[in-house]
Length: 71
Image 1 (cartoon, rainbow, N blue to C red):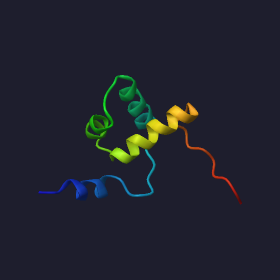
Image 2 (cartoon, rainbow, N blue to C red; image 1 turned 90 degrees about the vertical axis):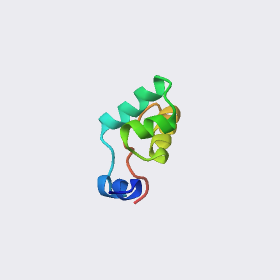
Image 3 (cartoon, rainbow, N blue to C red; image 1 turned 90 degrees about the horizontal axis):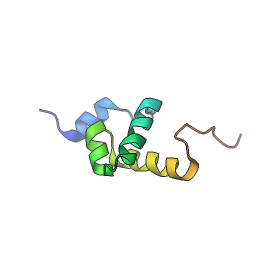
Image 4 (tube, rainbow, N blue to C red; image 1 turned 180 degrees about the vertical axis):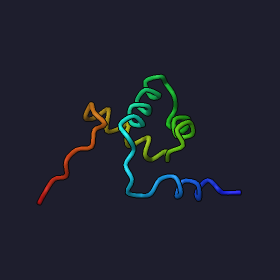
């Protein structure tokens, strides 16, 4: 039997980005008044990721990956 932390590591590496569909699903759930915890559980992604997506959407109005600055 696997623990939840092991399952997260197998499912999504630290540098892997979520698809635009998943981003949209997070925003849709948020607009449907689902809590961050519930969205995280439903989509099986970390709460910190859900929170970051919602915060970015509220501040910038988009969930698209922004180009890196510098160099």
